[in-house]
Structure formats: C-alpha cells, structure tokens
Amino acid sequence: MSAEVPEATSVKEQKEMEDKVTSPEKAEEAKLKASYPHLGQKPGGSDFLRKRLQKGQKYFDSGNYNMAKAKMKNKQLPTATPDKTEVTGDHIPTPQDLPQRKPSLLLASLLVD
Amino acid sequence: TADIISTVEFNYSGDLLATGDKGGRVVIFQREQENKIRPHSRGEYNVYSTFQSHEPEFDYLKSLEIEEKINKIRWLPQQNAAHFLLSTNDKTIKLWKISERDKRAEGYNLKDEDGRLRDPFRITALRVPILKPMDLMVEASPRRIFANAHTYHINSISVNSDHETYLSADDLRINLWHLEITDRSFNIVDIKPANMEELTEVITAAEFHPHQCNVLVYSSSKGTIRLCDMRSSALCDRHSKFFEEPEDPSSRSFFSEIISSISDVKFSHSGRYMMTRDYLSVKVWDLNMESRPVETHQVHEYLRSKLCSLYENDCIFDKFECCWNGSDSAVMTGSYNNFFRMFDRSTRRDVTLEASRESSKPRASLKPRKVCAGGKRKKDEISVDSLDFNKKILHTAWHPVDNVIAVAATNNLYIFQDKAN
Image (cartoon, rainbow over all chains, first blue to last red; front, side, top):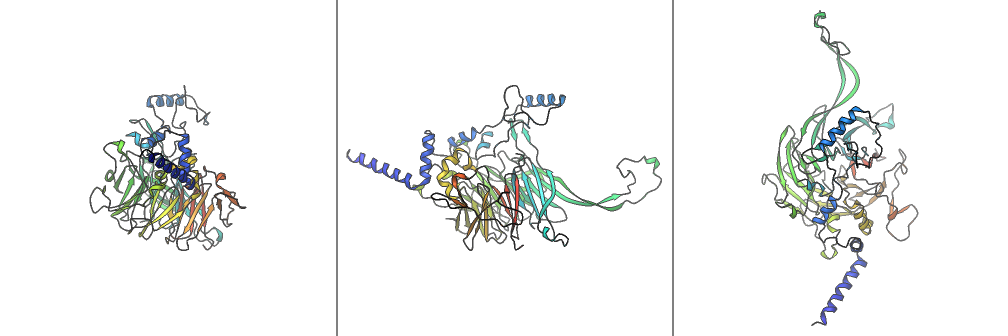
C-alpha cells in the first residue's frame, strides 16, 4: 500500500511538468506563481479585488479642496503645474492635479459600496 | 492625456462620426458630400461640432472623484433635422441635441443689432424681423440628464429599437430608461449578491437586440452571455438563454477566467448573430445555439505565452471592442502596437493592419502586417517582444453601409476607406 503512494505522486508531478512544457499558458502561470507564491487559486475572489484595490483610489477631502480653491483665487497660479505626479505633503490636490485614473478595472468600483 | 479617445461611433446613416475622449469632450465629424469643385474630398470626414459633454465631479459623500471620461456614445435614429446622441461617463448619461443654425433674425423691435436693449420710449414703429442667412453654426445642447441611477461604473448604453427607451449597464445592474423621463428608471437586471464576498462575476457589456425591442443581452467577466426577454418578467434576473463555450478543465490555469472575460458584445445587423470579444479572440454566436460559438477568430494568439507579464503590467485587463461591417460579412477588432485585425467571415481570410502616421500616407494603401510568434523572424515581420503594449487600439467603428472604418489609436483618430468608394 505505502509503496504505491510515492509512485502515484511522481506520475502526477510528471503530468504537471508535461503540462508546463506543452501549454504556454501553464508555463506563464508557473512564472507568475514563482514571483507571487501566495497568489490564490481563484482569481475572481478576494486576491483579485486586492490587486484592484492597490490601484490607488484617490480620496477627496472637500475641506482641503475648498481651501485650496480659495487660495488659488487669491494668487494667479501658472497654468503648468510643476509635477503632476507629486501630490504629497503641503500640496493640496485639486481636480487638475490628480493623475488620471486608470480605466475602471473590473472590481475597483465595487469597494465604493 | 485628456485627448485619449475613449469611444467611437457612427450614426445610423454613417454621415456623422462621434468620438468621446478622456477629458469629457465629444467631437463629431461629418462626411463631405459629393462636390464637383473638390472631387477627391468626397467621403472625407471633417469636424462638425465639438462640445464638452461631461465635467469631472466629486462624490462628496463617498469622497471619490467621478471621471469625466466618456465611456460610450450611442446615436438615436434621426427623426428631424436635428441629431441626437447619448453620451455617458461612469455615473451620468446625457442626451445631446446637435442642431444647425444657418439663418439669423434681424430687425428686432426691442433690441439693437448688437443685442443691446432699446429704450422702449424711443420705439415709434413696429417692424417684422427678417430671416437672413448666416454662416453655418452647429450647436450642441443637453436636453436630458439621466443621473443617480448607478452605484457602480456604467460600461454600456444601448438604444432600443422602439426608439423610446434605452438601457444603461454598470458592473452589477442594468437599468431601463425612457428617453423623455429623467427622474425614474427601472432596474431590469441585478446580479449583486446579498453578501459581497460571494461576488464572483460582473457585467461587462450589454446591448438591445436591433429589431426585437424586448430582447437584450449582457456579457460577464466569466465569459458568459445571457439573453433576457423583458416580456417574461419585470426583473430579468433569470435569463432566457445562456451562452457559454465549454472549457477543457485540464487546460485551466490562473489566467483562464481573466482572459475569458468578455469586453464587448455586439449584435449583427441582421439580429441573427452576436459577437463577443475576450482577451485573445473574437467569437461569433448564433442566437439559436447556446452551447458554443459558431466561429472563433484568433486576434493575437501569440500573447498566450506572454500572459505573465501582461498580468503584471495590467494589459491583460484591457477592454477591446469589436464591430461588424454593414453586411455582417466581416468583423474588426483592435490589438497592440496600433494593430487592428479584420476577419472576412465568408472567405475565412484575415488581415492585420496598422494605424500610425509612419506606416500610412494619405490615399496610400495600408500594408498588411505580420507578427512573428517565435523562431526566425522574416523581413517586415515584427517580433512579439518588439510590440508596443502602450499603443492599444481599443475602439473601432465600421460605417453602417460603406467600407469606411474609424480606428482610435490613443489620441489619434484614423479613418480608412475602401478604394472602391
């Protein structure tokens, strides 16, 4: 009995290896799993959502925004903002500053609810 | 980046071509009529009207920005001299009226020619204003605003063949509107689970049948299409037909579901077929057969061995559209490197063409392109590794009658015509 088990496993491993050789898709999957060992089995589930979450939803503070708008009214700012990607620190972001969001990927909008 | 074209659509006659962009603007092109003075200009599309359809907004309650990017434009069939179209961003649909003004009234009683009000006591005689010709002016005005009906991002709008209603679809719901009524819409499909953690698929596209006003289809991120009949019940959660291609379980990988996600669904003009676009292929389905598509056309199969890097750079989530030609004999879809593909369904021939300034001079024929998947690269072939994945053609449109196509390459619009025209 126990002698059969190691044989069964090695047949399965061999099939997997064959799959990687014959199927380019499985080879790509192996590559991905090598880079991200904790990648879940079901891409439609929470792992997927988490990756979309990391796409950086910009949160908007209406108080800061209105104060920045008021400040802008007082001094004429040049039309070209210095560095559009740098929205940190003392800089209060306004709609023009925010980097263009990527098109709404699959489940990104679902966190809204 | 506000110039990036996000949607392209011909109107029913093909005389007008509308584009929407990331900055919320709509640009409409009009086809030149036959002209004896400039015979070569017949068939050229020139700018007819430009207007700002949507502005960036902020959802104060949820602290989120709402992009002004135009996701879709759909024309209404023309009923009078004016043209109407629906344009939508993630949250709000607008009905725009585009009308021409080529006459101006002169000789008003109460105001001067420059618009200043006249002193009523100085008016001693009445005159009838006269209509005088003026330079053509094209005006766009918003006639209806359909807002606050979508919690999630709108991905599709589709005008019904009854010309009175239309649908709008987001990730989880489809709503039915009447074109005259903005304060109410009916929810006809709702796939939101009671517990969001049970969510497994989302709606990716939806369209009304071109002739049967009670029929609509919607596609999902799992590669399935559901056909619904609005006569069967008010809420179409239960489909009438379910289209899915069987999958070989042994070939399943991490990428299987992602690349099976349908990014676009389009009925044929005949209404007999529908076409779906997933990441690597275009499939044609016979509405009478749910078990599998009748045709599968490979768009860029060579990308199957690049899925790992395409997942890492997010390209695997790119949403390509597809379209039929007027006679349903050919279909077209975009790819990377500014390539687009056309498939002739009758001859079973396909061609890869490129939309770029370097590769095409005005009035010159397009040269077919070939991608070398591996092995020895022939002269004029491009290897998969040299493809530019930032140059994606997501949006294409085909004239409803003639062999004229519009291809959007990032922020450039290309219009190609058959020599026979």
